[in-house]
Image (tube, rainbow, N blue to C red):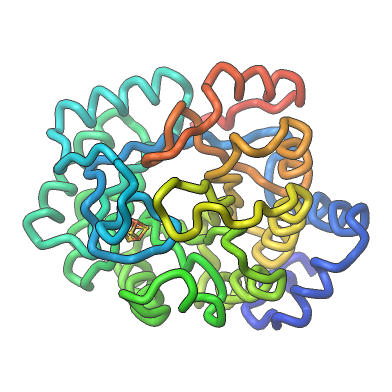
Length: 318
Ligand code: SF4
């Protein structure tokens, strides 16, 4: 009965029907499924570090790290191992169980991949889970990262296939699916989600979730990001998504992919604690903690712990 819920053939119409349910019905269904697969009052904490910032040749219209937009970002090359280890140690001491490292590349060279493998080994030595996001990977690069012990590779689909052309033109949807397949074939876990609030329609949000649920295996981790509007990017000034639409999006993701951990990811600074509480009720089971994401702000660790205290949520043990 429960396993019948693990489906890969959801349609956009079915996902739309879930989105359009009364909110109480949607939340009840999502929370009921959440409790069958996940601890109801525990949230996993990841911390994110930009290990190489800016100068990316891609044209993602939301991203301050693209060379196509003048965003005044402080850029830097790949950080040395010692700096990354210090940041990981701080994150570990604060309660993070996974350390995520992001580099603004279209795709890494083999020598850059080798350097990232060193970082992965160094962070693994701290007994933390590791995740990296480096852009598109070849089969061999995915294999090298897996051999270094990398747990998760993040590569988002961003949005629905229909809206994709409004977001990025320098790589195709299929390029993304190919990288995800290389990551799976190398035996790593997949972190893959998208961004909402980029001017897309509800049907596009449903389309994104259906694409994720239609992957040969559901991603273990599904980050749902709210657009953080960065000055200088084409998407700066987009109409903000109502918080309850984010809640609905998380609930539908939870129903479509019951085993996946849904991460309430970027954009929490624009959500009240009450809205975040509804996201946890809808099935979010992970957040990023720490004052910064790759380049954008995030609530402070202290305020997140105070929110957890009010909600009776415990950070998930490693
Ligand atoms: S989202 Fe990633 S790939 Fe796109 S411009 Fe930013 S750093 Fe480059």
